[in-house]
Image (cartoon, rainbow, N blue to C red):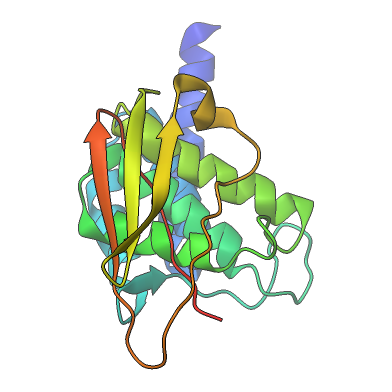
Length: 199
């Protein structure tokens, strides 16, 4: 029975591999995950193809898809395909700069701390958590001094519980016309994820 199950999985992978040219980037990202799970070396070639399909602008990278292949609906699913590609590529090479640029794109495409739908939010979280796992990031205490235009606006302290806090810490400071400088001074272990927005 185990041999039959193994053959069935191998046959399914082979069938999917033969169909890879007809797949969207979403399908190819899912196939990379399947191939890697089975230690199938064809995942190397497909991961290179997937990385070549990315769109880049400034310091951001994403995969675009204007339909939902799972629901057979015409709806922008770029969030989902980017999150799945991030999941596939981060497991292979967590330090890849492409992963960082795609994570930034995902974070900038939230609306009020969430993504467009519950499905998109779930898929985005799968991708982001995969990056944390691939990089072996752990919850560690640290503090951050925030400076805006050379003036310290405060210190934020983070504990291990901050990693799973539902809401981000928001620091507000007055801006000036033209360019503004934001500087963060981190003390302690762990990783700080941050973004800045001017209004």
